Every structure is written in C-alpha cells, then in structure tokens.
Length: 334
Length: 305
Image (cartoon, rainbow over all chains, first blue to last red; front, side, top):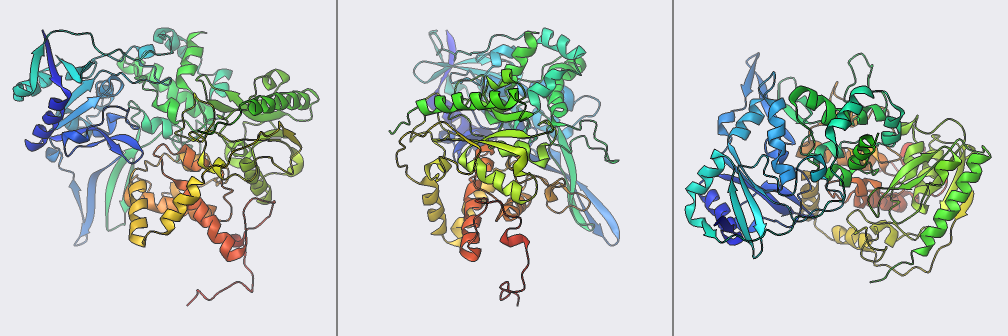
C-alpha cells in the first residue's frame, strides 16, 4: 500500500497548519510570476510553475535586520533581533531543486561561525518537497546529481500521482511528526505509477572531472570566452537556491538606525573591491570564474558538496544569455 | 495569430556573416560585436567576433534581444579590442549608439554600423520555441518605427511585410495615466516591493556607465542599498531621472528584470515629458547635451518660488 494525500487534503493541510498557528510558505501567484510567499489559505498554493526565486529566502531573506541602534541620553543603545520569535514554519510544494538547497547551505552557515538567523529558521522549518513534472530546457538537476524525484533535503516528500493524488514519503523525524499531527488527511491506497518526470536535455555531468579541471585552470583563456560578456548584475546569484553571499549595511543616521544583512553577488564590480581601491577580480570574467569555482570547487573542497541544484534559474534569468549548464558541459568535455 | 515570415532572419544572418567576414579579413575592424546562437533553441547571446572564423558563427534571429551598444560603453571597456569596431544594431539599438556618440563616449568614425532590417524580437516571457508572432513579440517591437535603420554603414537583410500589432505598452501607459495618484502609487509600490536590487536594469543599460553609481555609495550612503521599500523606490526614481532625456527606449532594463518590473513605462513617461516640455527626443541624432544637462539664460524658471 502507498501512503498518500489528495491535493484537496494537501490544501486542507495548509489551512489546518495555519489555524494551528504555523507559518506556511509555498509557491503562490504574485503578479506575473509565482513566488514563495506566506500562504493565508491552502487554495492559494500554486503547483504548476517553478517559483521565479528559490526557497532559500525562507531561511536567508533578501534583506533582514540584524540589530538596531539608538543614541539614548548620549549613550548608544544596541538592540538585538529576538530570534526566539521566528515562527514554526512549514515550506510546502518545493521541487527537489529547491528542497535540496538548505541542506547544502547548512554547512556554510554553521561552519566557523554559527549564523543564528539562518539556523534558527532552519530548525523551526519542516520542508514538504514535491516531485517535479514540469521542467523546461533550462533545467539540469539530473546533470548535477539530483533528479525530478530526488528526496534530498525534504522532511516529507510528495510524488505526484495521476488523479491529483500524491504518494507521501516520510524522510525525517520532522516529516513523521507532521503526518502524525494530521493523520486524518492522509490515506492508504494501492500503488500506482507516478506521473512521468520531465525529460532533461543535459547529460549527467562528471562533477569530479569538472572539479579536477577547475583545480588546475584558475588561469585559462576559456574564462574570457565564457564570461567576457557578463553584464555584472546579480540576477544569477539572486535567483539561485544555493548562492548565499551577503553584505551588511548600517542604514539610518548617527543617532538611530538598523544594521541589515542582504543578498550580495560576486558578479558585482564592487564585490571584492578592497578599501585601498585595489580589486583582485578586476574584470568581469574573473568575477564569473568565482561563481563557477565557488559552486564546483571551493564549496566541494571545504564541505564536500556541490553548490548547485540544477534548477536552471540563472540560465533563464541571465540578461546576456550566459548558460552555466553549457559551460559545465564544455569543461566536462576537456 | 499573426506570424512573421522567418526567412527574413536568415537573410539578415547571411548578410551579417558576409559583411563581418569581409571587415575582419580586410582588417577594416578589429572586432565585430554581434550575436551567436545559444545552447537552448530560441536563445542567443552577444559575442565579439575577432576572426573570419568567428564571423561564421554570427546569427540574427528573434532571440537577438540584447542592445549591443552596451559593449561599447565605458562600463564594458576591455572586452572589445582596441581599434575600429563593427557592431550589429537593430533600429532600437541604434538610438543608444547615437546617444553614446552625443555624450562623447564613442566616435562615429571608429564604428562600422551593420544595421539590421529587424522584424522584431521575442518578449522576455514569450515562448521561444515558436516563430515570432503576435503572441511572443516584445512590446517595444509592436510600436517600432525603425525596422529598417538609417544612417548606418550597411543594412543587412530586407524586411518582410509586417502586420499591425496592438500597441500594448502605449495602452498600459494610458491606463496608468488614467489612474488616480493613489492607484498609481499602489501599482508601483507592488512592483518595487519585488525588486531584489540585482541591478540588472543598471548593468544592461548602455547609458548606465557611471564609474561610481550613486546607489553604490556608502560613505556616506546616498540611497539605501538594501532591498527594502525605501531604497527600492529611491533607486528606481534615481534611475528614471538620470536616464530622462538620455534613454533611447531599447527597454533592455525591463527585459532583464528578473522580477518583471515594467521599467520601460517609467522611461517612456519621462521621454513623453521631455517631448512635451522641450520638444526633445533622445537618440535620434547625436547631440552633446540634452535639455536636462544644460543651462540657458532663457530657461523657464517659473517653478522656482
């Protein structure tokens, strides 16, 4: 027998979670696109499009306050953000390319410094991943070791079945406890074949061979070929489920203000600009090289993981058509 | 659905390759800035061709959306080799070249402009696996008046009969104009709330070539650089104002925006203002100073109270 939930009950689950005071985030129509946004009812859950931005912002928001300061009676009073107030959260409907990313990012956010902002949200969030049936020609999750039915990173995983049903796989204790809390919404049914996963154009990449090439080709004319045309924006990094660089800015006045942490991108000209004015990544192709090196070499050197889930968002978003999947295939063929 | 005859793009491609190969072989130019096909069907990328062999790879198709004038601006210095440069330019891109020449960023005599007879390009959200049609053509192309560019060194290809398109952007602008200020505010507030400050609008703009963008300053900070309502609004106002009288309407900012903010509506509204107030249209001919960057004794000063 298969443990399953109907789509109607999945939406009911969202409603009941909200009623029980859980903060529920999922793909939702927002203007011309779908974004991960807080849901106010299960009906709003949109399951037919890949959200334009990834789910990383649930743990690592576009921008967040990390402290506030104010001069009171001549003395500066600094107030921390109370992280205990972060709500218990359920992320629902994340495809494997999004569900997989927090588990990848955990390594860096709990490395030499514990990023409580990220880790506290992570601790309080249960991820309901969902098998993907809607890829396009920019998708390449299978090429980087994931798959449209990969359960990596999910606490509970839903596989779309015919007739608006989902087979339910409990992956972690968090996932088990979620199903235990709402037993009436799940049912047992006889096994059926899942809906077909989308076919992907990209062949499986040999990430080890790619890393070997990167290990020895920090300087190579190929970088110019790959990325001389890079316009230097942050679109690729900002839509990426795995890019996690941030900047910290004090905004306000000398009397009162807020320290904010917000997304940054290695494509920006000022990203590595030193206070002296020297910039070790002085031209755009060196900045793009960092993007590839970080994802497929440095992160692997440090944490043994690849910093890319093959969601294809950067391929779709790049205003000059730089195609990371094509670049990786070219390196792989070296 | 009205489909555009695709053969015209092949004729442009052929003409570009022929011209580019000749210019490179004869060493008239050091490089040709053009387009090459992308890995995915219906996509293309800017490319700098430096040899006759490279020239063979150049293409023109409805996927050739980029305004290549960007690559001749100071912001992209270094990727085009020194010497005379040829550039493939659609009518809309040509206006940016005229603007950059006017602002002393380029010399006309250092350029060979390969103008293309352009029937139109894909919209950002348009389905790229289908031929160009009413359903997937960019908004700017629907109202294009310069399908066959003038004042160029060579025109590549010939234009097919083009259908009349519904001017969706003009209609959207009219819809916004008809709103109350509160409604318009709500419209932009919602759009700007999605801005993530990726700066694609700035980086793709041929006119955003400032070496120090005001919005990157932090000592002192001029505009909040964090993606929040206040800073987002300030950035988009700064952008629109700094481009008023300069923006040539290529709409690359809007196309590049990953958050679908209709930025060209702002550009277009500013252009309309310039036309009404100063009878000025940016980018039609190289002109050193637009109305907003010069002072004349007889300027209207009635607004100073």
